View 1 (tube, one colour):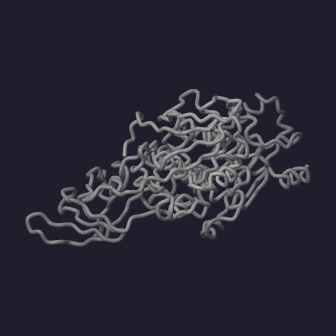
View 2 (cartoon, helix red, strand yellow):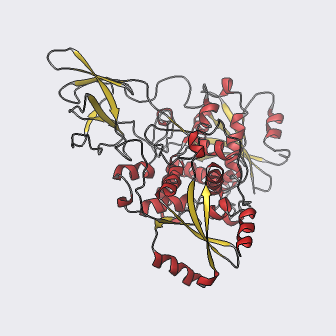
View 3 (tube, helix red, strand yellow):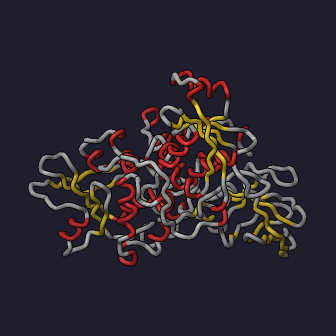
Length: 493
């Protein structure tokens, strides 16, 4: 399908009698596919799309905007590889192939590329994915692309990326959705919370690329994104979400992996008189973990944190999709896919605390003509075969994936042993004593009114920070500075 910004969709929109509110919209499967694709976007991809589209006028999406901006501004010397930083700046999705079937694909990701080295190392054949900048064991850069015999283009079929072709859907102003089912209109409207349509007016409204991006942004910062876009009566971000601070451990889709036992140490700097968190000091492991937020798909993040304190319209979409009859209106396993906490192969960090899984590949077939002395024919996670020119016979070697963020293994993105400063909105900078002192001076806080606390960060605290980052520009305070911590502060005084 097209990724052109000229693509347009026509929605039938019902507006109330006073023309102050969108009651609901009727949309076809092409539009609904695009809407569901929002849940497949990594958080970093969303931050990137919004930053590029709105430029200097970009809205703040919780603390994700400042987390992403801090990543952009952090010098590449703080990363194991330049490619590792690029992976965080432009994270990929395990749904990239499905999204190429969309009428409008705002992620616009290219098919995965594979690169090899013509040399062998200890009987292994090295290869890398995504970028051509990984250095092989032999010292050469693996820049020779290996073409897939069949591309990763989306498969043809009668259905869309996530829903059945020909289906239509009712979308409420708060993004609750339901299939447009003949004979049960009243029930559908009731499910969307619509009880009065007296004097309402139906309009045809065109949504193009700009409106689609506005809708993505609106779902993250507004309770009424359709009204905001179509009528233009938006609400201020400051009044949007009433975030309740505190640590909250929701029910996850599956038991936490062994990494859930991992603990990180972080020091928080607070003002004693107000108990306000000023900033935190953390080592590379915690910063690496924070940046890994950007690789998590939006639907997976919602699956991890649950409904509490999430942007209302965003969570309405997520939960109402789970109530749709998947076999009739959605393509196979769509509901399961949209809540997956799966990220592409090579993206998981050793410092990950969440129960994420890493997508992979089982086997790939190539057209050859890519690496000497043989032409690669077949690749799996464990084996590579290649045909020797002229002789035509097949040889086998063990395959070895070299990772971009840390070629010596799965590794992590951020290098140590640098100490980093993390502000309340998750902006990350290298720690500098002079900079921290200037914060106290700017705020008029004497050093005698400053205290330092050491916190252990595990799965519970990590989930709370992730949840806060989606909805609050003070993610550290709302994620960590719960009443029990305030009590701890008072006890130490």
